[in-house]
Image 1 (cartoon, rainbow, N blue to C red):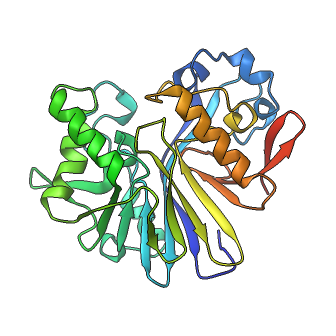
Image 2 (cartoon, rainbow, N blue to C red):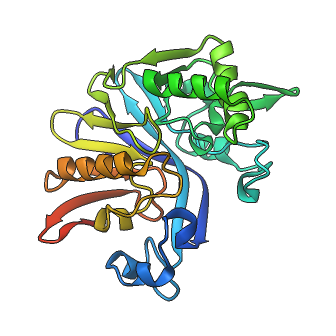
Length: 289
């Protein structure tokens, strides 16, 4: 999509999950719960016949006058993820899809991960001659300070953590390469592009807000995994490390963007990756073009 000002925003798809059980993603939520919502009748995001969810794994690329920014780097290739076969030792044509929007890895100036879960850091690195090396050789990797400090402490205290593999193969190599800049959780990382704290999914989780002076967009990462959470913000993800603040962050974000014309861009929205949020008597809903 294009914003009217100096930002051009593109999606680079890694892969789609076309049929996910709701309770894989959302705590205690069944197919019938999904089908009872308005979102459950939207074939862009749900199979209305079954209540199964559609999900996407993709990066967002922002071309700006100050450089090219890549937001969230998905799962990655050749990653050892035995707990989730759909992620394990995959070979997706992600870099080929990056090339289709006219970019090589060397064209990326900045990489920013909204948080450091494995499906948001994977393409930080690629496997070369048996070693994990930065995929984007000219990029500065921007990590929110609270998020990076949390995971550093977590892995020192629990070396066998289930999150260990993404940390070792997708985060530590870019730190070792000297390509990481830690930034404040509310930093302006490029002109008109700011981080904003949104804790809960992870302690240092952020969203990324873009404002070109005439239009606005928010890259919401995993604050909202699926559009049904716009309609039902009390539904938390199984992957939220702390659900009460995750719900607060979601409600705060929806309140902030509703009725403003702001584009909401989720990290896992299938179909239309950009929505506009509107307030209603019962809460919030969305529309897509």
